Image (cartoon, rainbow, N blue to C red; front, side, top):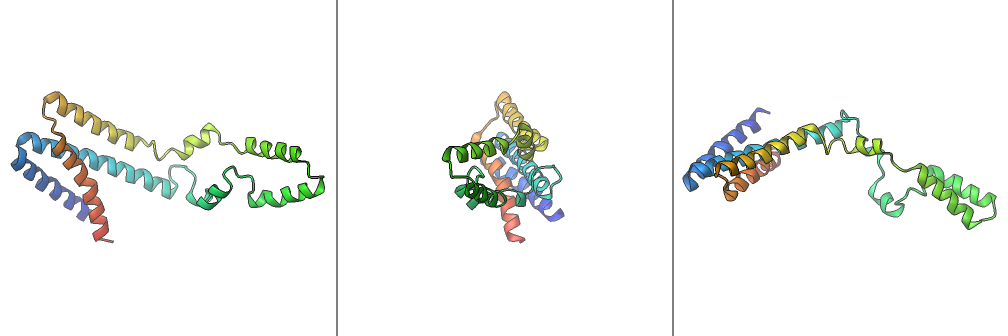
Length: 175
């Protein structure tokens, strides 16, 4: 954990010095503001994802969800394996009245709709307080730079792009 932090601090210092020599004080401030605010967003996203994977946020685990092939083949969950045998047996028992079968399937669809609470619970990692706070810091940083008349989008975006790329490079090289 210590090595990536040192690596990021070194990158921030080297980037700020390079931006200072390329464009002066305003460029270095833009680089640093973009770098640290983007690093906060990446860190908050990683924390939210980690909480989702570990199950500590109360969201639904990945193995409990429908896989990709089933979601394409059976978008509405009409032919789940547990219900398939019952549906086939019920269809064999009665004369295959299409309208009765359609009513039965519509009733299953209404029963299987997700409630607002379940949608909110599964979306919890995406709207975590950490991520929202990081985006607020990012927005306030840009507003502050604009209010001071220092905003330079080239150096800001260079700083904001270098932190996620540096983390990705670090993770790739140390795997």
